Image (cartoon, one colour):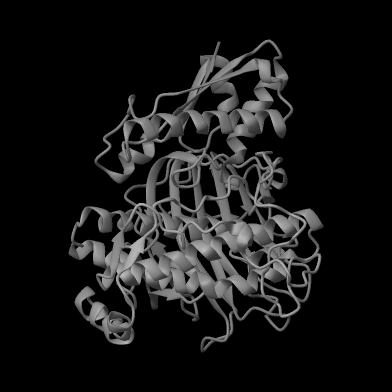
Length: 524
């Protein structure tokens, strides 16, 4: 559907508003994004994605003040935002089940953040529609958009889990809107996470440039598959189809180096206690990019069985001889049902695999020293056909690096990394990035005489002043994690921020911007 057709559809559906309601005004004050994470993956992801969409729509809300007309690409963005916001809104009730077993305070904090995210989503879908229909103008104050959250109804019965008797998410009266100031909230579970992502991008695909229903342009297969959207999750996803010996192969631009990392997100649908014990996603690193088994490969099978503790099956072949063919126990049954993030690190012969923060595989001699790994191959095994069980992948990132930064810091006295990731436009550290900070803490623990200056850098998006402040806030956030989680003394750490003033690559390209968003650690 092109933007003209979609716009006509929206206008037809909502045309009664044109005559029934006056022109609406835009809000001037943003709803605040929560500063800290809850520590429940589905909640943190829901809140983060909700505010990412909110920030996108809020940007276009400023057009109402300036009287700037929407361009074709602006209309496309707003139409996509409406779809994504609707999907996220539908996912909110399902997140409640993930609060079971959490402490009362964590449940209360989660409830507050979910409600704030829902308010942001409500604003986003309403505003996007009004902008597309030309019904939005700006005045100095918008009482509706800036309504004090304390004025919301407080007289409903709320359980300790943060839900009312009718099951709707409600704010806990015993809590206020003030978030705890401890930046380690939500990161503690990752305190032993030692995955270090590569920082030189080789391949990335979130399917945002592919058409829905098409096979993705940057992949190959001997079967079939298509890019889809899901009604409860934002973004675009590549659906692997069930079949015998069907391989899905991303088109890597070159052979893989000695040290590299692979990351991706998965969504599994229809998985339950009747799922086959053999249901798995096979990830194979191989010496060819064809639909055949090579002389050199390393294979990991990620299990989805639910009725029993699962096994990672691992096997390899080095110079046409197999040395490893084994199963490794790892209970990831809950994790694979909740949009798991998979991380794989290859360092010469060594191969490690994490599911979320949990390391499941660590084999020191899985890959041959001189094995020419050319491809990453995915294969779906023993999933029920005809849509009864489905698997989707997105955000595949392959990057060179992932080496031990501790020795580099000790030997050279300085490292720079863009592997520490933050939420868009904020200083909230993404927990999957904690492996790098953990390595920094180990250097400081080993030599108590070392002091470090932490320096943040941004790309050129936004104003100079905003980027300078953001870079300083991000450096301070890293310092706070070192202090609060790893118990490093504050007097051994200083921080600074350079904003966009010291780029290392071209800010006009996506890859260049990614390189410029970085954190430096310098001995002082």
